Length: 127
Image (cartoon, rainbow, N blue to C red):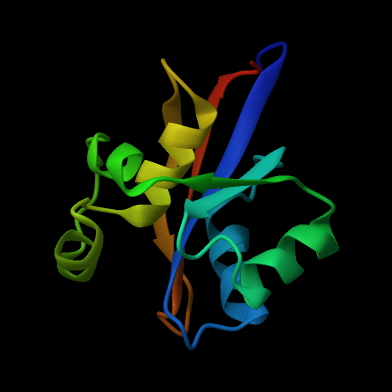
């Protein structure tokens, strides 16, 4: 891992997703990368499941604005994410935006077994 690296686990998830869905998506995406931050779309950042995961993992969260999500080119593309958030992947866009300029994906969007959550991991320099 690079010195002073910020490793961000970005999440996209449905309203009905539970903490187990987010955990499963994180497990699938981050098997070799321990995140230092969690990120998601601003409108989802205060949700109980996202905050519960952050509290359990004792990690800070980043709420990513709609404009920032739209500005990121993603590797994967979800029709639902494109329609709702104008980005190919909320998980990838949130991870990359939160990790800052020059960030790169370590793991593209991975989908939880129940298909309720996605997670992608990005790395950037610590601000």
